[in-house]
Length: 137
Image 1 (tube, one colour):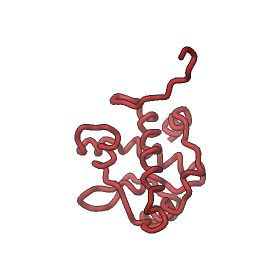
Image 2: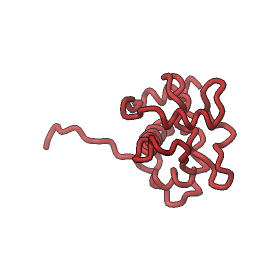
Image 3: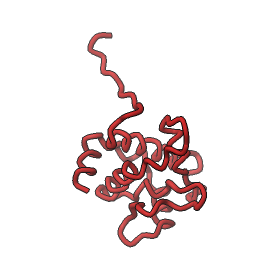
Image 4: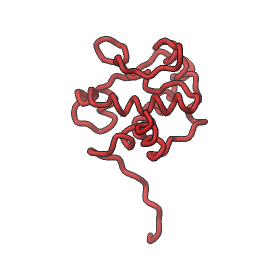
């Protein structure tokens, strides 16, 4: 139909802030799944995240640090727990050394807060908002 609004399609080569929006959607969905109230210790590896983003190989997960930082800072700027904290290394089970955490929180505290947050009550940040987070960082 003419004049019909077209939905955005994510793809390879998207800018950092667009990838950050996609990460937000993936992580918010992940923590809002059926185990939300039963298991607040689940995490997702960098490789699993990369595969969910459409990368052909999970090793691409090591390239997502900046995008995850954008997500984390956006969360904190809006009074939310940092979604990025649930993304971990497959071997160590810990987030990377650049993980964004709320003031004074440990990784475990941040992860618990992420799972207790009702992410369906929070709007998805626009790519413009995420771009400004990156530029202001």
